[in-house]
Amino acid sequence: MTTRCELTAAVFEAALDGSLTDDQRRHAETCDACQAGLAQVPRFDGQLRAAAQSLVTAPLPVTALEAGPAAGPRLGTESVLRLMAAAAIAGVVLLAAQSGYLRVGAPPAAAASPEATFRLHIVVRNYRPATELLEVRSGAGAGAVILEIPVAGCRIAYMAVPLGDAWSVVFNGQREAAGPSSPIAGEVRQDLSVRISRPIATTVVFDGVPEEASLDADALAGTVLSPCR
Amino acid sequence: MRGRLLAICGGLVGSDEAEDIVQETYLRARHNLRTLRESAALEGWVTRIAVNLCYSHHARGGTLRRLLPALLPAQAYQGGDLGLRDMLERLPPRERTVTVLHYGHGYAFDEIARLLSISPENARKIASRTRRKLAAEWRRSG
Image 1 (spheres, rainbow over the protein chains, first blue to last red):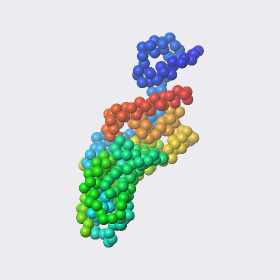
Image 2: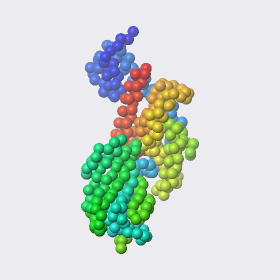
Image 3: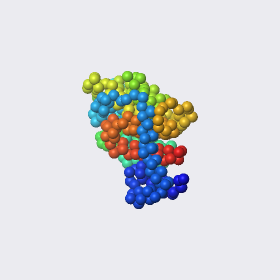
Image 4: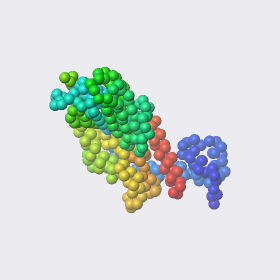
């Protein structure tokens, strides 16, 4: 009959991790409960293997290991660079449009309203917003993080919401004061290119002045910027 | 190829999620097809996309969906512990994917790392943590 021993759980865990000490080994030699605990480890591993194998109904093709980086959530360097460029350009486009200096595509029908706001939606992966940004503006509920990037003449806040392995980041920008446009594009470019250079943008939606437009990140990378008149 | 992908993904994240994953796999593959240099590697490339999506999958209805297998009749399989299989099926996608790739498919950690574009150390940590968790649950239930 096996008696209980308060060390059995620790002996089992140590054996599982391969970190069994000499003391534990010596103790197990004289303790039925711990011997039984030790014997459970290979049994557990065998059953874990059998259970995992029972979930396998089709093997992976051998070429899966040889294939290049998957076009999955983790993108290749080339894609990252392209999207980083797109994100940086998006920032410049949006803020320049906000300032009234630049517009995307055809000349707009109307001038930008000083009260106009823009919204940039970027889904980023492998991103740690708290370590990247300047200031946590307010405690946010439900896992959201709201941060603020101070830029001359412009207030930009963004909210990062975790979506599984990704972060959904929404930038909201608003000019702080009505009046003539200020030449902030250069400053913004520098500021935003730093902030947006690490995340991987997969979706960029521009919802702003003077008309709503949706811009795909890929398409945006080749966008020609024209000065506004 | 679709049937094979569904089977692979079903093992990694469960058949309920596999359909969505395969659908997303095709969309991504189509979008990124120009990056594929060797057409002969298509199946491996697409499979790798699917496995990566399984790994990063954020299960909808997570907790309830993971608990469902415990309420349903287990599929017949030989050997091993039925409870342990249930525990595997209830794991979050990331842990389940790494565990099934290692213990089920027999991939080494450096191979899993290559498949998932993570470090071998990270793959080892996930597998080790999951094994400890399963072992604790297994002992409690035994």
